Image 1 (cartoon, rainbow, N blue to C red):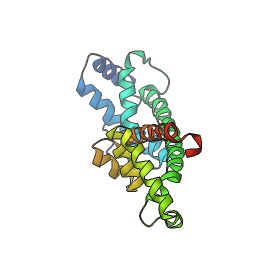
Image 2 (cartoon, one colour):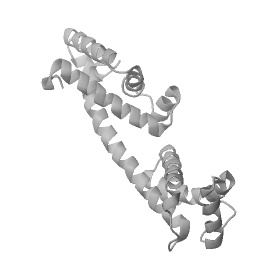
Image 3 (cartoon, rainbow, N blue to C red):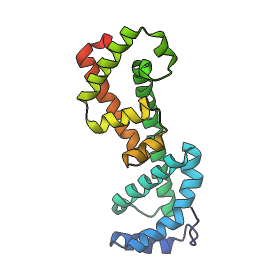
Image 4 (tube, one colour):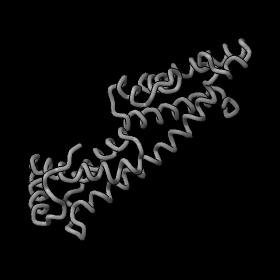
Length: 201
């Protein structure tokens, strides 16, 4: 990402750009993006998230939110950049929270499907009959959830692919994949418990 040619805190230029964006100018939006996106990415989002893909996703969400709420923007100390920075910090916090929720759900599910993985140590310790029954039970439960959810679980949990690879295979962004996976895990758990009760966990 390259820095924009415009220096920040040029209040007159900002005001003109914001007004042009409000009137639907894509060029004005591109000017704002080119000026502030590199700074937000490098100085705010990447240091907080530590992951380029997550930072890029949060950056896109920051500008989407800014565009949707532009009518509410009022000039303030620090200018437009400060307003964008506030939004970016909130987006980074949202990503952290989503990661925590996803991580807990994944840990819970992996405890269930661990024996199904090839070469898994736990799997070798489980009796063949019990393992077969567990695999069959999981397969039946997987068949009950949406195909999109089933695919997300297969890619991330059973095939153990990195999140970016999973997202590419599903032709969605990493951020969207995280959301789909979290919902998929919740759907699986709900279907599993409906079939086997709380003790089935």
